[in-house]
Image (cartoon, rainbow, N blue to C red; front, side, top):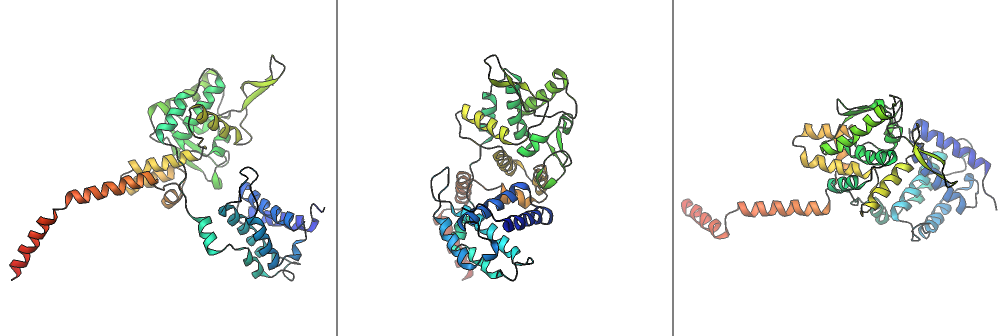
Amino acid sequence: MKKHDPNNERIKRQYFTFLKEAKRQNESSVDAVAKALSRFEIYTKHHEFKTFNRHQAVAFKKHLAEQKGHQSGKKLSKSTLHSTLTHLKRFFEWLAGQPSYKSRIQYLDAEYFNLSEKDARIATARREKPVPTLEQIKHVINAMPTTSEIELRNRALIAFTLLTGARDSAIASMRLKHVDLTAGSVHQDAQEVQTKYSKTFTTFFFPVGDEVQQIVADWVVFLRKEKLWGNDDPLFPSTHIALGDTRRFEAAGLERKCWRSTAPIRKIFHDAFNNADLPYYNPHSLRNTLAQLGETICQTPEDFKSWSQNLGHEKVLTTFYSYGTVSNQRQGEIIQGLTSKKLASQPSVKEFAKELAREMADLT
């Protein structure tokens, strides 16, 4: 069976370059596009893209709707269908304008990748995401062991994520010099730290508790005074793996290097929440916790603007739209509170009727 088409591979590389250089998309976004194209090529048995037409789009859409996820064993979600088909639609729209393709592909044929309006609404509907409470995160931190330097690192890692709201990619690449304990801040320099959209900004420690800040401070002091590490050394070093007494490779302290990926950070979070008998929350979910905390304690628009900038958002609406959803439980509490306040402040029906009668009598 044909496993690839050389012409397809060449034009895909051009498109990926276009996405990265012209559309400024990151590697993970491009990987999602590559996955969508791979699904389509497997379905068409790697036929050349020049053969694309609306019938292929309709047939693939039906085929994709019947596919099941490898892990869940259930049919793909509407959101997965929507994202996959959207990637394909944009690719073939772009392809229809390329030399040697525009005479073979009809631009409007890409429209046949669209889901029905009903399915599209289901796919793009905003759903409440599970968000850990501040108390749950602190419980996890307090339950973590601290007997080894690896365990100290793991506890400081979760405390630092809560204290700063930094993304895991930034944390994995951060150095000691980026943390200023005196100012209570972290300078996320895009030239050295893997920040989203390569933005450079300063984050001041969020008011999540002195004990959380102390854990981070103790960790920085440990690295500088006990390990004698300098400014360019990693803030959260990777684990050193060595051959142990049992002739097996095992953890043997800290490596003076940054992590190559964010996978170890997610594992630390997974293990910590699991050991605390709580459901797993990924590192990014702590940003949602901080956004909800900001909605609670910020009193003025300027307060929340500063809070939003501290999360690395240039626009307040980004914080509101992406992180600031009020939970269903909290929504109910607010509405019920407003209702009780309103009812408590209103006069009784009889008193209202008497007052109305008096006013009508005055008019006559």
